[in-house]
Length: 205
Image (cartoon, rainbow, N blue to C red; front, side, top):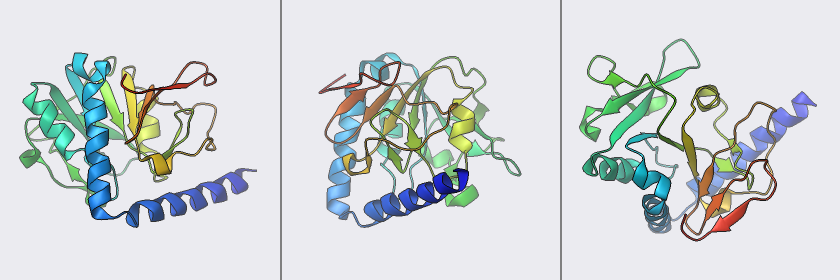
């Protein structure tokens, strides 16, 4: 069974990576902008003074504009750094994108020597990446487990951002996997209820 699930995840990663890589650049930019607007309209975004977010790679939903907007709104913005030799990551506060440099996997990361580490994981809003999310808010990442480990400790609120074409109804997930609280695509915002059944879509949360 474990082997079957592993093979299924490998196939899903291949499928949704191909979807993203084949997106027309103009269409991708339009969808990224639509997702950003929906995130900015979220009440949970407006009222949180601390924003945790990934720094996007080319195939991901763009977060660079989100980071710049949040800094302009005087939010405290923290971005992740993978801890060498582990499968753990830590978040550090930044004041501009200029503070970032290529780290593990070529992703832009903060410098521990120049940035202040986020220590309080009880609050804030975390923007969560994923190759795909299902309608229940569960994510499929790149298979390294960094975000799964981090989210198991994070007590704040979570928003997954994803293209509508990367949202199947169900994904395989484990008992301890944590779904996001909200899922945002270019076309809708989905509030994830607890328990997972009974989720609903809302135009602008």
